[in-house]
Length: 301
Image (cartoon, rainbow, N blue to C red):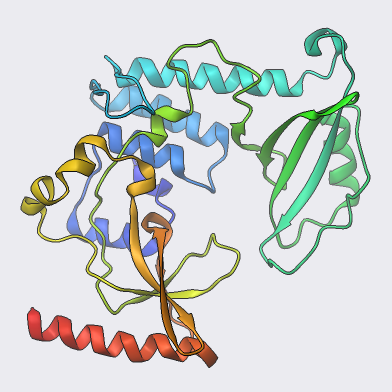
């Protein structure tokens, strides 16, 4: 299967193609899970294709976030059923399906332009998901919208609220905010994927300037250190992470531009792209440090 379509970074995707790198079954399942621009249906279709075309494997318990799985394929089947049940319960607006209580739905646009504020849907509530969809499609200009936050609110208890992310076409993108709607107490938990850890091959080196297109600040950052060394060294150098790490450890160290230098931060590396625009203002500091790091790479390499 072509799992690379779920890799959001074009720079990483091109690098993997040049390397001939092919993610294994567990890596592929994770890449599908974490893809931010794939709909729930696209993810389920891909997981079903993975089950049909890629080898099964067991998954050992790594940390408190996850349980061991005898079969990745069986887990994915259960996980998809879990997400389908979450969606079904979210769409149910009947009192019978909500402990005898009335619910309403609200919508909030999130724009690619971080400075744009959504006033179009303020103070509007709908009796069902379908009525919200009909109103939206008839009245809202979707230009520039990244995603919609849809909330299901219990009328007499605003604290009893569930959220989903949907596309401007009303495709479900994520049900991460629905774990309270359907919890059978088993391993069908969102925590399984969050408990995984991988080191993927990356094209970035110290001195490269990158950015995260999915991050609303659109800021450029400087790669401070080479991402990972020779593959043979990885299991030894990153032994603790291999054994106990989770997705929060899948980050690299970056430099953020300040008025008089660079401060340090960390970001998820799987969305990063090379930054090709001109650096202006405080971002010019990144270019100065970039030249220094690239020069050091040449001397040490």
